[in-house]
Image (cartoon, rainbow, N blue to C red; front, top):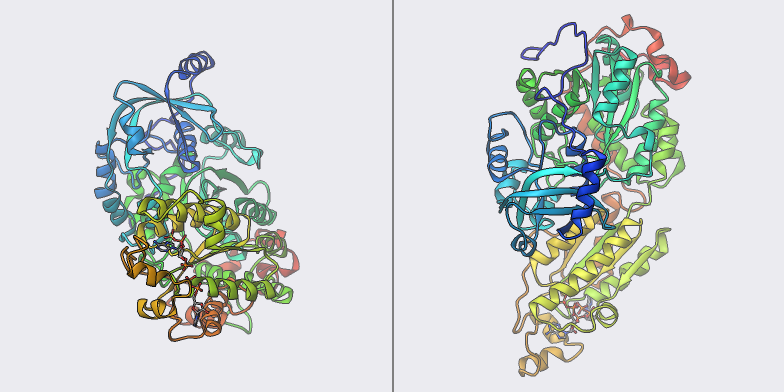
Length: 619
Ligand SMILES: Nc1ncnc2c1ncn2[C@@H]1O[C@H](COP(=O)(O)OS(=O)(=O)O)[C@@H](OP(=O)(O)O)[C@H]1O
Ligand SMILES: Nc1ncnc2c1ncn2[C@@H]1O[C@H](COP(=O)(O)OP(=O)(O)O)[C@@H](O)[C@H]1O
């Protein structure tokens, strides 16, 4: 395609970005020295995200970076997608710490970086302590500072206020007990590819799962470029709203069965997704070059997490493709645009558009009926892939009610609890506000600090329930927007967060005065009473708003259940029809090569149910 960089007939694997593959692991002698010295050092326990970044830095996946970024690189990357020395680099890689920790360290002093169990992973000799501008970063990366954008919210609320950088010496890599043989470093993958005599390698970074369209397209791409296919799945601190990586990897392994072993290999990357559209695509192109890839496939709507309130894509459909194409020569990789595939047959609406299809799939797989899975499997995916994926249906979420005292939060939470228990196999847990206060927040009062601690504790419990596939229902007043955003960020690490603003007006709550608290507050007998003598910050963008002065408890519960069903959290109600309609009328790029000239063996692994075998893919 025009503007794409062509590498020509390579005799060896593509060079790492910047020319040298970085390796930050020190030799055993130095490791022993650092371990001995670390006993007296200030210690930082790394979050899963930071640990993943450390691993990527250590093994050269992020070459040419040799440490977490300093302020100059950070600002240059945010503003112009370049390091301070001018090299293209699209996303920040920073080590954030609390202000308290930042104040306890000083330039020139080493600090110990440890995992959650306290094992020494690395020693960082501090060169610079600085403060990031997370608002500006969110604006540059996502084009929004809105809390409704989950990645922006994570950035704004889940990180420390300061950053630190310096010389990084890695003592050992994090231990992974899962999928060991599939987790290879760039050096190991390069050695494998070299042993196979591969010089042309197509990199593919599946956004989610791989269904027929993905397998067919990548297979054909490898064939047309006479290349090996390297499928690299990012499984670091996992994607927002993603299922657990175990199911995803099992489903990817099932898809791999549809290639011959000579054509494709799967590798797992402990990479934390950034969800920043074109920047992510550029970043992944660079990372794949570090693994030796000569080509990189760019899908539509690349790593676009969408706009929180509507779910619509944030960036242009071809933004990522244009951006990677524009920079391909500078990176030193050839771009392969993902093309949509169309299934010939008597049902032309059955387009295999990867995004449309996977969105449709999302709606589908949350449905409970077995037959519907079977119907989808026939034309869209492979039974084995769907079977693995189906095991993840137990997706957890948190319903978080917020509103004034007497607004109806507890009443609605109880109705929802009962209605969900009637229809759900998943465990449903009601974290009743009073019980939480009595059992885990009994020492707390109603100052801002204490309310925040109380709400965050409740949020933490909800995040654990959500992580394990359960449904948590919380109903605190939670008067502060920032604290609610922190709880959202915590829960969205593991599942979905649905904020329900119970917007019953103060006058109604006060008239109800179920516990006589308003009267006492008005009489000055209770200090800092929410709505009377203490603030309540109205939610700006909750998923649902109900007002129990206008709706009965049953009506409000119906509205919430309707939302959960329409969004695919419960039972039926996927937007299948709407999606089909949308796909039909979207301008699409069809597969334009002559499918007839492709060898039949490309689809040989698919058996009779393959579109290639039974239904011919056409242009
Ligand atoms: N000062 C003051 N302000 C607000 N509420 C007060 C206060 N003192 C006691 N109560 C009672 O405590 C309940 C609110 O507790 P929460 O844990 O939900 O509050 S918070 O989220 O920590 O702000 C709240 O219960 P609900 O009426 O169920 O909301 C009140 O009954
Ligand atoms: N439509 C309604 N929805 C919920 N509660 C209602 C409604 N109409 C009246 N109420 C009454 O309002 C009170 C709300 O109290 P509660 O649910 O404990 O609120 P909160 O937990 O927000 O303090 C209850 O006494 C409830 O019976």
